[in-house]
Length: 166
Length: 143
Image (tube, rainbow over all chains, first blue to last red; front, side, top):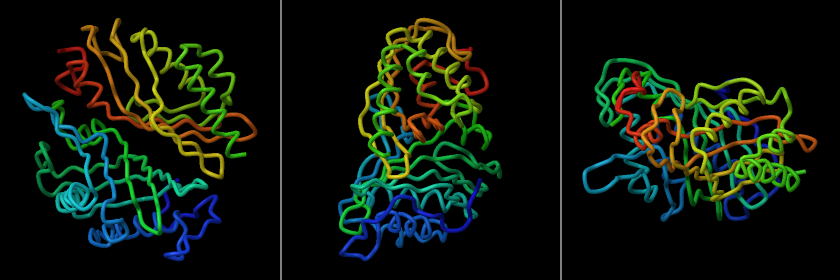
């Protein structure tokens, strides 16, 4: 099932005193901003030092491996902006959001789009992809304080016609 | 219910880590919603068991290390874990070169009435292929 509208957030009764939003509502607002391609809005929902980890991001060089780990305001913002730039019709479909009693929020989300520009090592062939993602958020004091995401990069590469394992 | 859900998933993963799939899948409903997109696996408990059997057979020293667990109030449990092992046999079309595998993964489970009713596994198959020295997605047997 794919939802284009804001999903129900299951399991929340811990409204944050500072923001008036539950952790699940903060994450829902984050994906609303993502759906609008509002990268600044996404970043504004995160704390200044929010941690960021896009696990599949990995580039093997001769001396070291570069990973998609760091801070939202540096690594995350650049990755989101680059993705939206390369896929200007990017869609973000949230299937389910659930939250714990301690402010952790998990979400299953399908992200997709039609390539209009080269993206990383993937040349533009004008192809479309849709790939399921798992997000794990840590929310504290009404702001996202950590984002981790998992997906199959090979699935995206295959859909975009990039068959080399870089 | 949520705390119970976390214990059920912990018991499932402990059994997988012990390479005891009979014990693991005693906790899974036969008609569980199984989605492992990186492996192209969709189906019920048998589909998940088949995938894990192939993985444990190809990596007989496989370890499963839980890094973080989120237990939601609705019975959803997400486990961030690392699977690590050394290839000892052909695996999903990849010939054995005795390469070492270590991949960070996210697994989402749903638990109802003490049984696992959904298993959704997320990892990057490109990361698996890099570690196993596969060069092309369309030719995993050629290294």
